[in-house]
Length: 214
Image 1 (tube, rainbow, N blue to C red):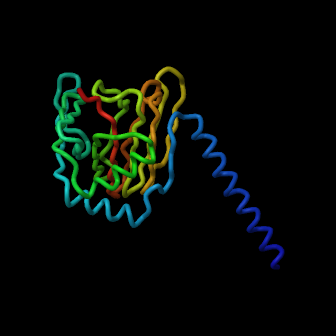
Image 2: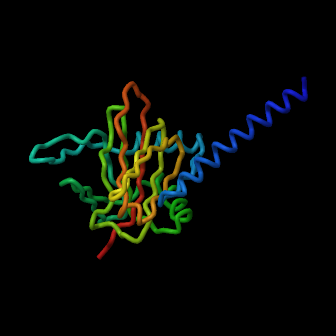
Image 3: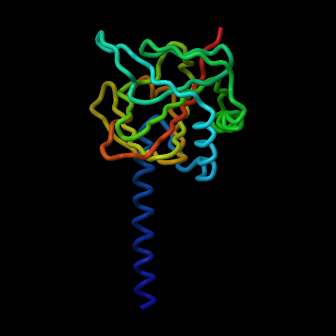
């Protein structure tokens, strides 16, 4: 009986390892690095609490095809004093970092070997909130520096597709995952966070960027 149980455990372990290796090899095809659980559960709880208490969320209006629309999520921008960020006709201005953000900023700078100077917060209240297909290639951004995206809270699908090839895939981003997008990713790929029905979990995404300064 013990021998049979040992065999079953070995078989299960083998398939778990096989699935993990398959996923890792699949991810290597894309110009980004996904670090699962980079933030611990306790760190995530603390940071979500600090963000929800310390941030004033807004829901910007953008113009698409001549019509105004509210973006399907809540946003906030933070960064070095004087840094601004514009996209889809919306401009965010920064007045500095909150004290509780400094340790995370320094840790990410060390992890990515980058001196990030701004970040965009997105609050997805439920599965109806989303982000359409886009690339982070605005003229204010340094095109030679990676972009780091930290997921906190509920899990959401992250979809990517190549600009010029018929290649498209979807990955699940979970609480504490860190996605590091290399510069070439913004050149050749688009990404989105699609709507999902019957999803009520709140998700916060913080995307750290390096903005060009004069």
